[in-house]
Image 1 (cartoon, helix red, strand yellow):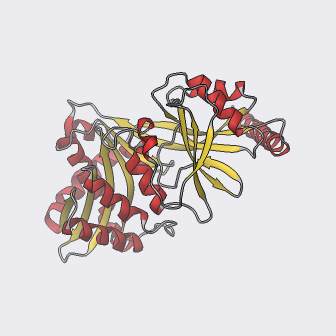
Image 2 (tube, rainbow, N blue to C red):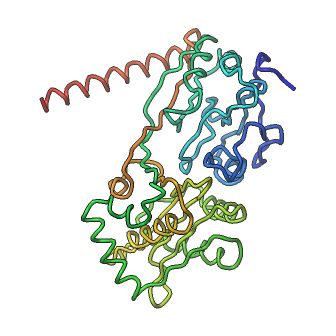
Image 3 (tube, rainbow, N blue to C red):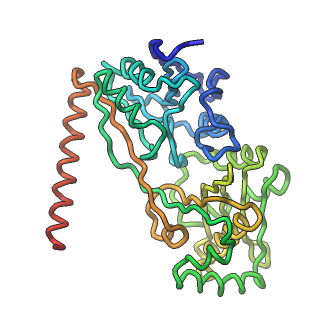
Length: 356
């Protein structure tokens, strides 16, 4: 077994291969709340969501620290995708985290800058890891990445308690539209593999093609993830159809360790007058609360206007630019990052003065 004081190494992975077995001590169980740190997640990403020309690599510092990364155009960056809600350094059984981070910093020093993004601000031992990287001579410059809307659930509140916490306009819409939907639509919930799942995947792909959604960069990913999570007992796929069987809306969640994450949702634009997306989201959340006893709801990446209506709290996902000031590319990246930060601060000061 390696120790935390060993030199860190960079291990390339074969294309579309899953993580090697030696990664298991660093990974979260697929059924835990840290779903995005699990083998199921990373193996699905590696097989179905790697950008063209990107090479997956693992940076390992003994039994302390593992960074799943990819190399693009000579730059190392987080192995994160447009679907990833959280990425963070994976901690191993050796608790000498700062020593491992120093070894990692020595590995990354002298290279083009490394970009770690999709990081929770409160990731475990992040401050210690940053200190170790700085101790190895790297600058670890933070930047904002995207907002994440979520909400812990009161276990005793139930569906009615959750509903009472929503804005009156949404609450009234849900109550009115649900009553009508019970008469005019059919709701299907899929949680296990089999024919129903394959029909649900086709329904999701059909309604997505008729929705407002942009082009899908990895068209095989959603179906692959639904199949993998269904096999693990983590999938909650909802489909709303009209009386004739046409798909009005579809969405899927991953429920792991009580934590429910909304991965994708879509509704047919030609049916929006009936608010099928709102109806389906309400039905899914009601089931997550009443049947699954979910402990939290996560609405994923970005600050879309509808998200604060459904969940009450926002947290920031950040990034770290790891750059060597003694390297020409690193020094240039530091200068650009610092100048950009200065511009943002100046704009914020101007905006505050304008509204003073």
